[in-house]
Structure formats: C-alpha cells, structure tokens
Amino acid sequence: MKESWQRNLIVLWFGTFMTGIGSSLISPFISLYIGTLGHYSKTELNIWSGLVFSSTFIVLAIVSPLWGRLADQKGRKLMLLRASLGMAISISLMAFVTAAWQLLILRMLLGAFSGFVSNSMALMASSAPKEKSGSVLSLLTTGSVAGTLIGPIVGGVLVNITGYRRVFSVTGIIMFLVFFLALFLVKETFKPVEKKNMLSYKQVWEVVTHPAIIWGMFFATLITQMTNQSINPVLSLYVQELMHGQGNITFMAGLVAAAPGIVTLVAAPFLGRLGDKVGQRKILGFGLFFSLIVFSITALTTNVWFLIVMRLFVGISDAAILPSVQAILAKESPQAVTGRIFSYNQSAQSIGAFAGPLLGSAIAGFIDYRYVFVGSAILVIFNLINYFTHNNSVTLKKVIV
Image 1 (cartoon, rainbow, N blue to C red):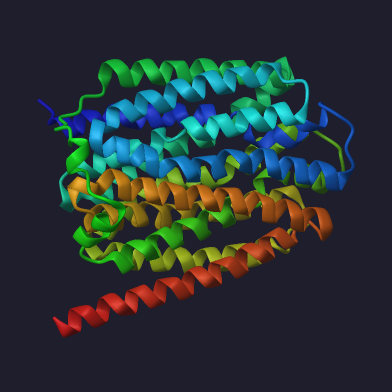
Image 2: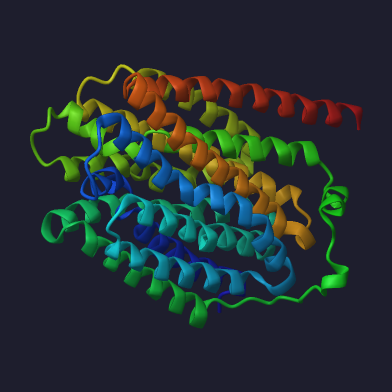
C-alpha cells in the first residue's frame, strides 16, 4: 500500500497536468484573439497583448502571500479547491468578451484565484521526505510541463476547427474537472494553526535558518520567469513574421510555445535525481549558464524551425533551474511556514511573469522581436551574479562552521 504522500503525488501530478493544459490552451494565441476584438496598429496590439497577458500575474503576486498565510492556517487542499474553481469560472467567462478591456478584467480575476501548481508544490514539500524532495518536486514539475506542452498544440488545432471562443469553454471544463479531482482524491493530514498562533511576517524569517538563500531563490525565480515569459504575448505575431504570413500560423505558434516542455518533461526527473546526489545548487548553476548561451543564440533566429530548436534547448535550462529552486526552498523552509515561503516564491514568479511580457512586448513593439532574446540574455547575467553571490555565502558559512 502506497504511503499517503506517494498517493498524493500521483493525484497532484495529474491535477497539475490538467491545469497545465487548461492554462496553456489559449495563451500563445491571446494576441491574435485580441486582434479580433478591435482594430489596432502593430504597436497597440503588442502593448494590449502585454497588458492582458501580464495582468494575471501582477494580481497573483499581490494575493499569493494572503493565500499562503491562509494555506498555513487552513491547509493546502482548501487552496487547491479555491484555485481550480476560481480559474474554471473566470476562464469560461472569457469566451463571451467583446472588448480587450473585458478580457483584461477577467485575466486579473484569473490571477486572483490562481495557485493550483504552487499549492501542490507546497503540499508535497511539507509531506514528502526531505531527502527525496528534489526528485519528488521535479516529478511534480513534469505534470505541469506536460500539460503546458500539450495545451498549445491542442489549442492550435481547436482554434482552427472551432475558433478562439470555444477554446475558452474547453479550458473552463478542464478546470472544473481539476476541481473535482482535488475534492475527492487529494488527502491531507493537516493540523490547523489558530490565528493567534500564526507567525508574523517578521517571525517567519526568524525561524528560517538561511534567509539569504531563500531570497536568492526568489530572485532566481523572478528572473527565470521574466526570461521565459517575455516572448509569450507576441509569440504568435513573431511566428507570423518569420513565416511571412503564410501557412498554418496558429499551429506553428503552438509548436513553438510547447517546445520547451518537450525536453523539460524528459530531463526534469533525471536532473532532480542527479541534484539529490550532487547538490541542487550545482544543477541550478548549470541551468543558468546554459540559458545564457541559449538566449544569446536565439537572438540570431531567421526562421521558425531554428526558433523551435532553440526553444527545445530552453527546456533543458528550465528542467535544471525550476525544480532546483523548489527543492532548495523545500529543504530550507521549516514545515510551519512552508506554505508562506512557497507563496512568496509564487509572488516572485508572478512579478517576473508580469514584468517579462511587458518588457518583451515593449521591445518587440519599439525595436524588434529578436531583441527580446537579447534582453533575456542580459537578465540571465543578473541571475548568474545572484547565484554566485549566494553560493559563495553558503560556502563561506560552511568553512566558518
């Protein structure tokens, strides 16, 4: 008979898989959908796309600490139910918008209710054995990645068959399924913390042994999300330009969007197990170096197939960076504050996912699409500086001890 954490891992993997599909079905085509809601110039369309795409994440950044505190007080399962049901309702309503500002409001509402994947991570981080946290969280990451991989491809097919609006309806149905999956199958042994016994924000950092490491991981998450998301709001427009407006643009945009997940799906479990053996910080450092090389070369893209190949390589860096950050946070977070630490990381992720598309759409609108990747390479340099700063501080502490 499987232990409870192993059973939850199976259920949550499938839940994050479905969430990945639901959240990525329409994402690569948001800019094209906005184009059907009004008449915009190239610059206006790029800016609107950036605002609509990013709005979800800035709201999520604001509300995540509040949900994290509630998760530590009431349990992570309740947060899974709240996230999946809220996402189901807000996404379903997107099928009925008639103007870009309406889509903007619903995307903000989506951000207010998001957080299924982060709460799944927090639940597993607090229940799985610490010595297996790297492999467990890496495996859980593949669920979201697999869904994100399949979503854009399925979305591209559905858009061609049914149009944009039906895709939102399909996504809403998927999220309702996730809600019932969490309601009936996820089991959590949780001892509620009374409100009077909840640690304050200041006390959270007093019980953490290495707060500088955790802040470093927050920064790594923020920058990684900026680089990953910067091209997304204008991705379909960039593919359209590379294909000179000819061919099945929506399907190819789906392939480009899904490409990083192909490699991440395969590489994340391997790198997670390797990180448990050689150290997660070494895997993180490799991922950062590799992403710098990949983004620098991607800036030289001249055709859509070269872009797909380079996006495949992004999957390797993501497989190294994202699970390593989660594993390091899990090992450095006392169980009493795990929910809030992961919610703070969710805020950092959301800020990056907000700032990245705005930066990318601005660069694309005022300069050129390929310079978005130049900006990403520069951001990775800052991430490497952050990595060496905190890695050296950890080494120094070990020497002193």
